[in-house]
Image (cartoon, rainbow, N blue to C red; front, side, top):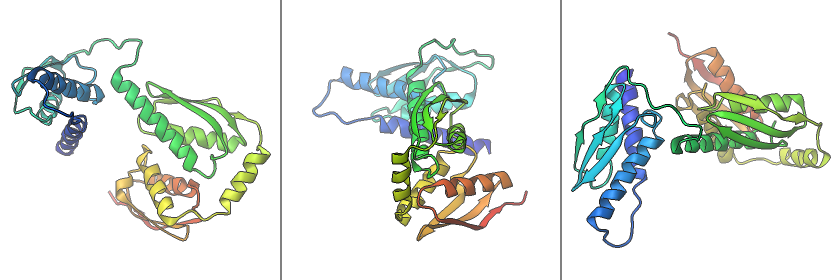
Length: 275
């Protein structure tokens, strides 16, 4: 299990490093190239939840990256090296990072780091998407903000049930540590209710439904969407595969039922794997 997690960690780090390497027209000077490489490596460190809290230094000269600083575990030192090697033009790494078991990262400042800002923006986008895709919350007038994993929902809901569902959808999102649900229940807005009724009468495409169900799983912490197959035929969604618990199965079914356009859910083939 540890080896698999480490491989996933290394792969995600390398992907971030490669993704940040945008091409630039013309032939840059050696100094510019090295500065860009240093920036790519540092930015990937800043985005990585495993490395961002560490005080790491990066310098590049003639295709060789020198890494300095301290980390708590050897896997983080290895990750830092693999990220550097994943940057175009880096041929060698002098990994001088020291492993210190009792290392304490620098105290977090009042201002969010670059990585935290990216994380919060991702959480906000995922929560907004789930609220938009849900047939039970699409009538909400909601402002979603996130700061260091703490989500705030501000606006109105047409029922207590819709407010509660919005809070649960937000809480069940990767990276969310708490939800401040400030939605005010004001009853249904006639114009919104009419629009929702008209929307409910339309058939969403099966492809759209399948995509949104899979995305909802991906944006949820307690459902492993990679283990669940989703197929839709005329609004009827069939879930198949194996999940770890009855609670995960029940949540997968509930999340599917909430997606706009879903008429019913066939979950007979979605089973709980025996231990």
